[in-house]
Length: 193
Image 1 (tube, one colour):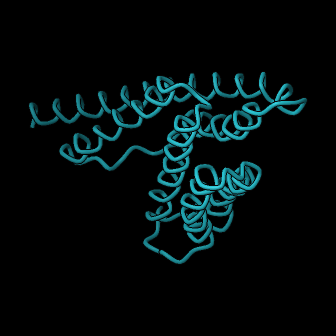
Image 2 (image 1 turned 180 degrees about the vertical axis):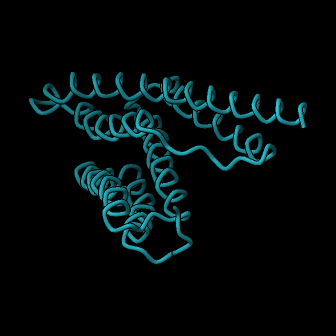
Image 3 (image 1 turned 180 degrees about the horizontal axis):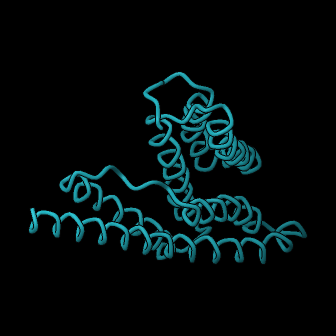
């Protein structure tokens, strides 16, 4: 059961993660302090894991937390993609592919609301996709340089990117399938009611 509480340990972690988004973006696009940006991204990844684990362990799952967690994930992904395209770390088509998936799923929210359903719960595949992308991003940044670190980071960066994008698209397809099933069930209920 989700509570209405706002001030919980997991929510504070999610808020802190949200506050890191503009800092992260500024570090990437302003002074281009990539190591500091990677550190912010790593802290974001750790707090992403901790907020969910603590919510379950402390019994502090909340309606706000259910909204904040994916919001923070999306904002990190969007800001990273924008910065990476602007810095020529990734091609534009890759960013469009990832952001297109999010846009399509965002368009499903009013449809769900119309039929009386809340937003879909984040499932494991979506979390795994985000996990892979959050590992891919710092590796892509490291691979963008020269030297031995870039040489080691490059194959790992491409692997995590491929896995992350593949899982991201797969989870998007599963979300769309769920929406289709819910809409079909609601329509069937309306016809028989």
